Length: 266
Image 1 (spheres, rainbow, N blue to C red):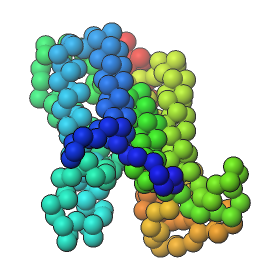
Image 2: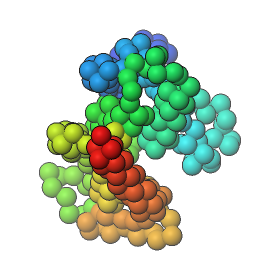
Image 3: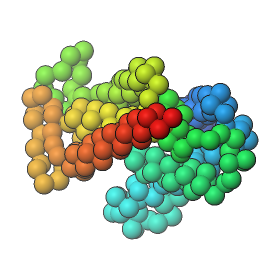
């Protein structure tokens, strides 16, 4: 927590550009570039890719805000006018992925093959979104520093004169690790859908057991924080981590089985 950080890059009266919005826009731009460039190489039509990306991005923002509001009702019951104010922060990562994934799937499902341009499954399309998601997580966690959010637990033993864990930096490093894992797995040319579910599996693993352990979120069932080392449990995300890991691991295995079946059937 750096108390004198300005969350705005530039501000003129009531209008301003925040670091949070700027870095989110950069991550969306990077993700869109990779999504379209590699989607065209895979045989998808360019207009279809742009439409899918726009629909998924808008649905992702709505889903991210919706899940955040649902899981933090006390912040909005007394002031419902704050619900649409995403410029004040409050977006759920899981809600964003879920909203974007659902919207992209519904859009692709309703289109004939001639308008998508590739005989590929939705899994192949989802795989193309992984680099953008990883870069987005990396940059938005840096933006959290400027917003004074995603604060870590206080700890007596910390290097560099810190008094608490830099949970935002841990999260940003997780985003970098996810990108490196994706790049390594992509070299093996796995079947469609595997890369997306592998991303979500490793994300759940790293966030649940590293970032959430040192992040000062409310605790449920077990409320414990070690004052010396600054680790704690269990947050809401940690409670759902075993379920996320089981589901995504099962979906990874299912994509591998489908890939093996298609090769054997040729």
